[in-house]
Amino acid sequence: MNSALPAPNIFRHRAFSFFWASRFLLTLAVQVESVAIGWQVYAVARQTRTVPEAALMVGMVGLVQFAPLFVFSFIGGTVADRFERRRIVQACLAVEAVCVTVLAVLALHPSPSLTPIFAIAAVFGAARAFLGPANAAMGPMLVPRDELARAIAWNSMAWQAAAVTGPFVGGVLVAASATAAYGTAAILYVSASILLVFMAADTRPTSVAAPGLTAIKEGLIYVWSNKTVLGAISLDLFAVLLGGATALLPVFARDVLHVGASGFGVLRAAPSIGAVAAAFYLSSHPLQRRAGLWMFAGVALFGAATIVFAVSGWLWLSVIALIALGVGDMVSVNVRQTLIQIVTPDHMRGRVSAVSYVFVGASNELGEFESGVAARLLGPVGAALFGGIGSLVVTGAWAKMFPSLRRADSLTDAPDPEIIEPPAPMKIEA
Image (cartoon, rainbow, N blue to C red; front, side, top):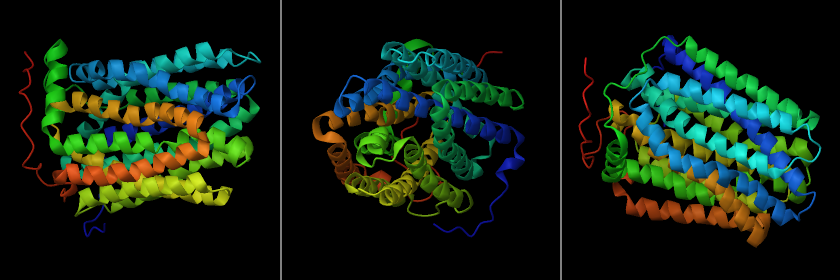
């Protein structure tokens, strides 16, 4: 993993600096909002339901966010390849700010109904279906190609640093009131949008995507024909889908480890502590060789750490397992995102990012639902154990099914020879 090359200052690119800061605040807002929704839904559900039934309600939050994300992400990818990507992101941030403001008002009720909370969570999913592809496609436009791996590591660090801070902030605010947590998230969303105003960069796609379903079809064909991209995206889907133990952290904190809201914040932050440490190292020491093997090793570590977390009865061991889980996830994500961005031309990035975002959304939001259902059938410990074992099985299967991904070496060289050229873009008319 060592690099003999000096690490250039990625923040000398002004546009990237504002983009990075905006990404940090956006992620911080998402984390605070996520903690508030998860804790509130579980607390409300436990008033009338058993532990397994309440855990299923927490999982339902993930499902209602994933459904609109899945429906609209392909459209969002086409929009990102036709219009200015910064404006798309800002519009989505405005929608999310309004949503958390409504949640803040609803939280004033002592026993709110879960129905409007789920409805607003669905709006969040729809907004992120457009925000995700545009944001992912915009980042590579702000740095030179040979600095892309470092930029992705720094972007991941922004995400993970906010994910470390967010649960603590969210936990403290929720302890005071859910309204305070949602109000803080609204301020963070607005601040993230304001930072993008100062990003002096042209974020329009280099070519305009074909209209309607044709553009969506082009993106799907490109991903399907590119075995490296297909393998990387689908590996994340199935490994994290099965290993989504973090969705059950409210259950583990309250009814397994018995550590309450403060312990819940510690558990939520632990994966990000490991991920930040890995991202910090990768930002100055990007992988030079055997990137594919490092990615598979990261997913395997993710699964093994999930198993340890499942069987742990001590807070300290659970925290260590979650930190290791974060390290494995960060290594895998860094390789996967860099490979995808390097082999994808700019005029296809929105649509390819949309496919990736659907898979990531499935592995997170749908993974939360899977964990909730598994917890209902197997109990929280059994569900986490099942998921960790499943992640290890998927790692071995994908290493065999996608040899080109396993053989991926450098993250800066030319694309793999298996890559098929994408469809030609439509030219922008004067």
